[in-house]
Image (cartoon, rainbow, N blue to C red):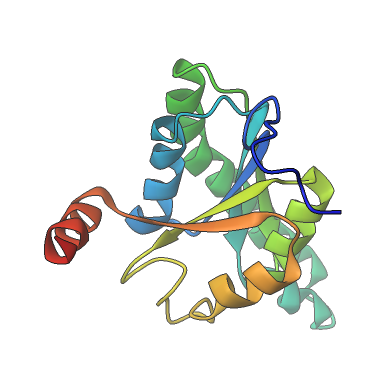
Length: 167
């Protein structure tokens, strides 16, 4: 049954997932959540690492792969902490995770686990849409595979330029 027009929920989006890849464009999505005039129940920052886990399949290198994986996980958690503190300073409840694997699969799995209402993706030259590590098509495929809304966020200056061109 379709949602009744005009009927309002407590907040528009209660659980927001923000997948990050280390780029400024992806981080723009984390900063944008503050400006969306929402009061979500929780914001989840997810850093998606790609590729380390495949090395576990090499016989005899399990321990070495585990050490690399642990080091990258610690590095990822350190990367997420400043973003977490900034959002918490704005009154948001923030969770973080570092996942490893195919980005599309990891984001879909995390969105389902969180029962996310919204997935914010950074858009731009170095972000989710155009990275040369297999992320160029994640937004359209993600939108088809998750129940949540998917919103692309441009980095501030690029967003303003696009608005000026459209005017």
